[in-house]
Amino acid sequence: MDRVIEIIARLDPRSILDLKEDREVDVEFTYTKKWKGTYILFENRMDKFIQTSLLYILEIHWFSIINSCVTFLLLMGFLATILM
Image (cartoon, rainbow, N blue to C red; front, side):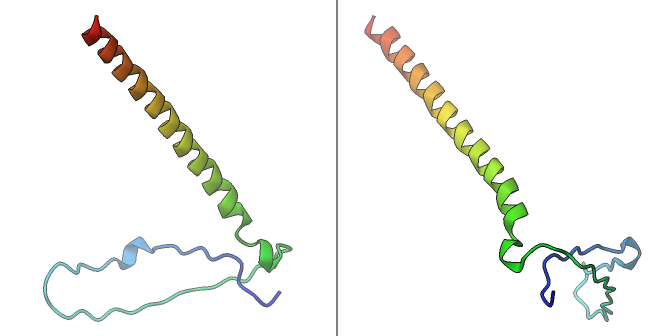
């Protein structure tokens, strides 16, 4: 229980600075922390990210396969039309 498993960073909308002009700006960084115990092993800390990203990757692969099939069918239709 001596390792960091997850960090949640939030922005305070009241502390936004305008950095559009070319001038020096003094910025003060602050943070708060809250330690919360967990039963997740350090070796398994990335499991929740892998599971959600795997679904996203599979979705992209299926879209690519379907897109290729539709393109192939359209090209074959055009070729058949030209040859007839």
